[in-house]
Image 1: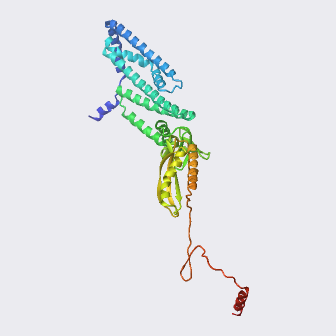
Image 2 (image 1 turned 90 degrees about the horizontal axis):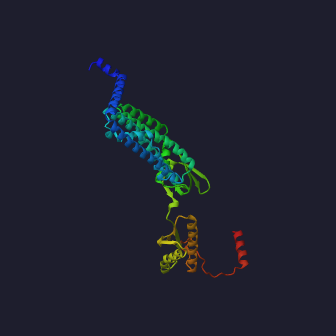
Image 3 (image 1 turned 90 degrees about the vertical axis):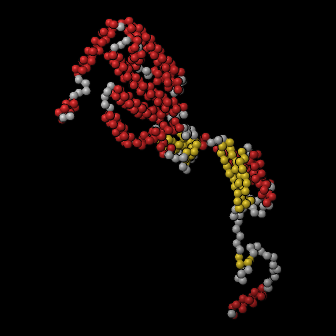
Length: 404
């Protein structure tokens, strides 16, 4: 193809004004002929379309009643009810017209026109329904988990903007593609713009999506006691960007949602039990048969205090003791109950050992001393004969020292 022909192709518009006028003229003429030749079918189709429209309007009113049925307005019936109430009148009319095209025997020009309007209405209506269901699902989950209202309102505002922009951008692209517009450049432009926005606000988006992950995955909720790293406390609020935790010493800890989810989180509120361990060391002088009875003694003490016995046994030869261990559980997550039960069991074990006259070992060390000749001097005094010393002998000894 020559340069001149190429330029002519580029300069030629996609749709010229005279083409639009011609198509409009053809549509008016075809409609006039259609009315004159198919007036009876048109009346029947109009009646059917009216009935369909009234049915769809009634369904929309039913959706409003369904939305009001839930007291909180965040239940699943309310979510779908609000989505139904967002059904557009233009969509209802075009849907009814689309359904009766064959009954009315519409000409090709009229059918194409109705198809075009129905495509536009249905695509944008689908975007509206999807937006309401997505936002309703997020709000339903957040409200049911009792997240803070102020933070949820801020999050929902931002989420609504993002979801609306994404869905309606897709809807616009679909409509333009259906009417023959080349949308490749538009898609590329939206992609580049989305990447730029994402890079500029990646910190905010990371914390926002982490907040959504907390809402939907539910690793914890407000009021739960959690532990992460070396810190622990009670969750007081889950916000758009950060989570606030009241520490065990009364301080308020603020950590970003993303950083919090990157850590291993222990939800102490969801514990089904708490476990305690005691290591008890007895003297090496304790007889073997008494040592064999110790695990049974510990079990009796644990069960007498209402705890769940797990196991007990000999664990090793210590530096100055024979070491035994006892493990037991406190049912439930209540830390105060676990703490009091552990104290009672510890005192009970001590009392039982005292009653059995079993000594608990404590660290001991013996120092051995040697005489000048290398013989061992025992660390305890030996019984020896003690003779009286004459003071005269002491005095004579002192005089000899002076002469010397």
